[in-house]
Image 1: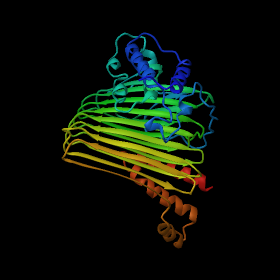
Image 2: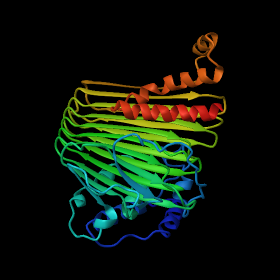
Image 3: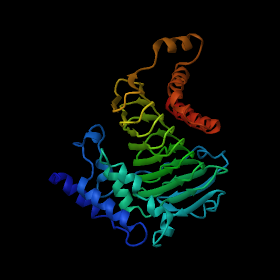
Image 4: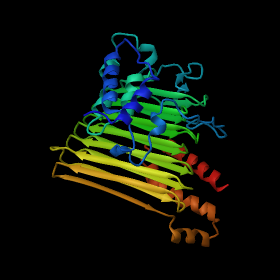
Length: 427
């Protein structure tokens, strides 16, 4: 079916600003992704999964300028023993990064390997992204696969001794960045991946994670405090037998952020947990869109998303659990909740279940409301100032999402950042 003219024009205008990298092991995947972009067209408000969120800033030929944020607090995860890898406006900063050497891990840059004819990532780059285009089109992810020129290729063969930390700095008010990371987890391997920072004025990121039998992948992300940034991130993961996947994202500020997560549980007894906590103030739109497919026996999935909104901020959650025929003994849970700190903010939710097996335990729920006045009165009656009492109740509201972080030290770091955000608003 032909694309509407408006969508066709918008797609052509965006593609005219980009150059497709030629040659190397990723060329076939790039060409295939480009064909998907042209067939689907870039997203618009008439698309079902974009009706709550305006994609204009993510699809325009050039990004809107975003002021550089003056960091006034210590970097996130600074107390954690980690391998630090730094990108500045999408360009790898070797001088600011640690050596690409970690026991049981092979680390390479996409930019350094792209001219080679053969590479292990050839079988993975763009593969999960392409699978994730059905049944919902994700053209921004396909655009990334086609045009991203840098990112990390990470092959994990055993238990990594410490986390890999990706640090994204934003220094150019006009920066327009695409990064594409590919992670291959061998059987029994374990890795924790940390991400933090605003990355760019406009940021398009894809993370593809292949989790083999018995492997464990943990991911904790803190999206930067730059208020004017716009970002679209995509995580695509495929899980083997008895594997574990956990991802948590904290978002504070940002004029528009869309985080997509697409997970396939293809091996029996696998487990996937996806969680997020966001705090928005004013001209703020935050969209979590999650699609989890159960295609094996006795698998577990959890979606836990909490949003705190004030001064007209908007939060969106679109989450789906698909249980295929034969995926018996599925345990799927989904909860999305918002705390509205004033009458001007809004929360838009679209929870979905689609089940084709009969021996399952699946549930979803979505709520939106204000601070519990009885709990607030209880704290105020015991001498707790109104602002601090509100912050305590807000942190209690966010706690269920934070509890999805497996490492206690990382969870404590996230809570500290939440407390700092609340304190700034109270001040």
